[in-house]
Amino acid sequence: MKKNIKWLLLVSLIVAACNNDDSNDEPVEVPVVPGSAVFTKYVALGDSFAAGYSDGALFAKGQSNAYTNILSQQFAAAGGGAFTTPYMLDNIGGFSSGGAQISKFPTRFIFEPVTRGPVNVPGVSGTAITARLTGSFSNMGIPGAKSFHLLAPGYGNLAGVFATPATANPYFARFSSSPTTSVLADAMAQAPTFFSLFIGGNDVLGYATNGGVPTSQDPVLGDDITPTATFNFAYNTLVNTLTSNGAKGVVANLPYITTLPHFTTVPYNPLTAKSIGKDNEAVGLATIKLLNAQLYGPLKAALTAFGAGDRINLLSETAASPVLIKDETLPNLSAQLAAAFTPTLGAQTATFYGAIFGQARQAKATDLLLLTTRAAIGAAPTAVDSGVGIAPPYPLNAFGISFPLQDKHVLIPTEIEEIRVATDAYNVIIAAAAEAKGLAFVDTRGVMTKLSSGGIRFGNFTMTSSYAVGGAFSLDGVHPSPRGYGLIANIFIDAINAKYGSTLRHVDLGTYPIQYPLTIQ
Image (cartoon, rainbow, N blue to C red; front, top):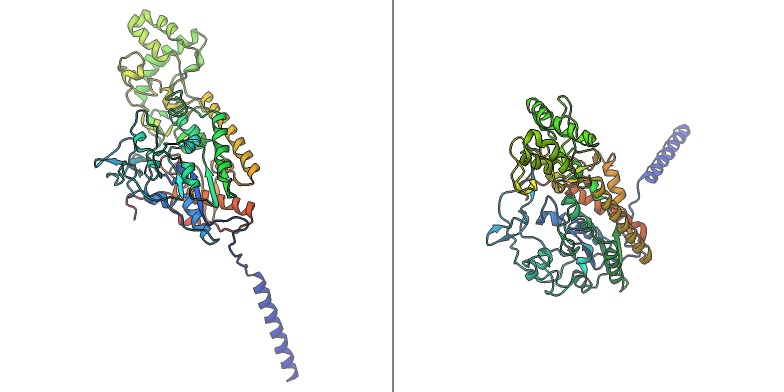
């Protein structure tokens, strides 16, 4: 009996020890606390990213998945108050007028599996461009806004939306408190206790998506790169004003937009003899032979005579070849080419050839073709494109193949460098402002680098910057997907927790889709 008692006592001690070990191994749930931040009144300022723009449009479901809205939901567990959004009326996207979709503000994209590219959803947006909302809104992300636009009085004046050129923004005009107010003024009227500021992408984006062609030398009205001095004034005015009443906040720097899928998806060398995949233009072997004999060969010989033979080589019959582009930084050899071709083509035709190919070269890996340029390759150029008022005849009637893609289709290295220099200057200003005011700082440039070089892993998924399938970006190649916006929210949360000692929780990225369907419930 004594032996049995001793044995039972030993077993009970072992069981107790095991139970104690198990309890020590259980994770202790950390309570959500705000730390030194006060989330009672959160106001978000920014551009299309803050608004939740996705797939080339602003629509209700995209707005609900904006990183700003996700943040507000996580703030709620730490004392955050209500967060209001100026929702569009449906999930069609864009604006309508008189019951018709406005072409400048088209419907959202969906993925078309046959062409493996984006197409617009059918229908007409229920959001009329003249409709206005009442009340104040926490989400003040304005698609299309540059840094200094957030300071501009009248940026929400509906009359300015219809001016030529436009002096106001239709997204802000929907909910601005008055025709004369500014985004910053309406934000401050809400007495924010916490703010987020992610602005500056549009200060270079318009220039980039226009192929490095500014539409105006006026940085307010056109698509020029915003001067550093202008950005510096605007950004510091925003930060100084937002913190003037003691509000804390989080700011983010800018990625190199040339690493977005809009600029990295279309290859520089898509021309092939036969179809080999979705990213090539099947020219055909017979056409390649003909072009080499009648165009590329003579051009190569003439350019070689002028010491510029490296501009063009014969198209390959077996491998992928680069597209033809116009490079405005090259010496213009139009007159020399016209003189060389006159004996065989006649003066008029030779002059035409000279004008077209005077600054032509084949693209290189250092050039970036825009996502929208995919549709232009092989298309027929117009009389305007030729520069001499005549639509190019056969065989010069195929963009990128027998006629150079124009400046608007391609970013060349000098333009890419302009964008890089401006972005670096903006990021210095943003980092300095964050340091001076003691704000949380988000390194989106570093995150974009990870997405572009191997990806970011979570759970069983890896998110990359690859177009359509990478999971991070929507079908316009610039704005995030729902999952991409979840990632942005998480990196903002990391920065806030690190700066203010809060314990906000991440969202589960696996619950966010990488694309929206045709019909959104």
